[in-house]
Image (cartoon, rainbow, N blue to C red):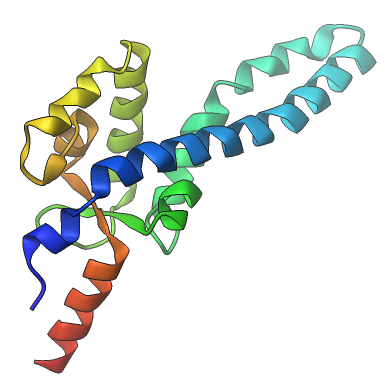
Length: 153
């Protein structure tokens, strides 16, 4: 039998480490995109530098699109055994939930990130962006065990 504690055990520290992994991966994505856009700007004699405006969208798209893929997690979260699910039924997030989750996360980070501390006081250690979107971050292993248990009985 899978307990609620199994779903959230160690998720806070794993989320922090996953964020660092994702931050590094976003940085690795940004470097070639920046270089390509710089080259484009130079080749167009400065007219193409306006395309640099797409750079802030890269982190948002990284998180948003990661939540919509099969594992419902960013690469950092997947690496650390986490997945993002709907709080009500533990199903994968839909596009609107993923967009709200990602947008509120970046709004929280834009305001110093201190609002992330709300996770210390909420059920299932949910952050503000979890609460706003109706999602929760759980351990993949516990979710797999819960699904397997449901298939047996």
